[in-house]
Amino acid sequence: MPDIRCIGICTGGGDAPGLNAVIRAAVKAAILKYKWKVIGISDGFDGLIWPEKSRELTLKDVSGILPRGGTILGTTNRGNPFHYKMVENGQEVTRDISDQVIANALKLGIDAVITIGGDGSQKIALDLFQKGMNIVGVPKTIDNDLSATEVTFGFDTALHTATDAVDKIHTTAESHHRIMVVEVMGRDAGWIALEAGIAGGAHVILIPEIQFTVENICKYVTEREGYGKRFTIVVVAEGIQLPPELKENRRAGSVGNLVGDAIALRAHKEVRVSVLGHIQRGGSPTPFDRILATRFGVAAVDLIAAGGFGKMVCLQQERIRAVDIAQAVGRLKTVDPQGEIVRAARAIGICFGD
Image: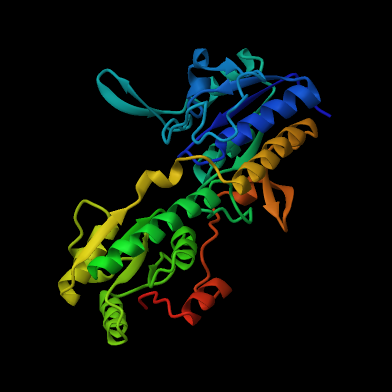
């Protein structure tokens, strides 16, 4: 059993509903169960680059944050201490300041760190662990694409947000007899698009895992018109594989607009595009996400108490377990094009453009 008196908590990468629930659970478990001190590390690992930005977290600090979106600690997509960008003599350079991060953690009296983040944050955590820092990981991404865990907190909330948007799009699409394209998040995996599309009654779903053509989408639209359906809802994941003709004409902007313009040009139909963007990251987490995040936070603290450094908590077969961070990073969980969910979608007439 390690001698732990103080732990640090940081959140890295894009925000997700449920981050505050993890922080709250970890702080409460650390203080109430183990009598540890807790340091909140601000803005990812920046709080260890500039330790004056970090602060002690008390029970009062986490009171009332359970239903809040975002993170009270702040976060950043930048700030990798192994490749830290800074300006020297008027020039932007990249430096490895990981030794400084480890030294500052020791100066703050931190014996172990909980890193809440996605694949990128966990890679940094692994590198710091390999340099001697006591680290435990908590997986986080609304994309639900981390292979080591069955589900990540934040996904359920994002799914609810996207589904609600598709629900609302239906009435305006039907009223104006339009094709409506809804772009959702999902850079490498199409989980949000797939499940929000099914739950929201979309007619076409485009995901990174299935190659599509605009021609196939337009044929499907024509088929719908043949049996009296004068509107079509298309849900698009931001990371879709673009057909060659769209890649050639790609300009700055969203793939949703690119797909929408292509459909309008070929089908000679009125098309409107809604890009949901960061609204999917915001808002109060669903009960499912609050509970999962709470379980993750408590499990991370227990893992530190047991000396399980270099590991990440995860959900497997509905139970909280721990896996080596080294086995978790760099492995994406993508949609199986032949899987049961896709087969179910096809069975009810949903088109994937292939």
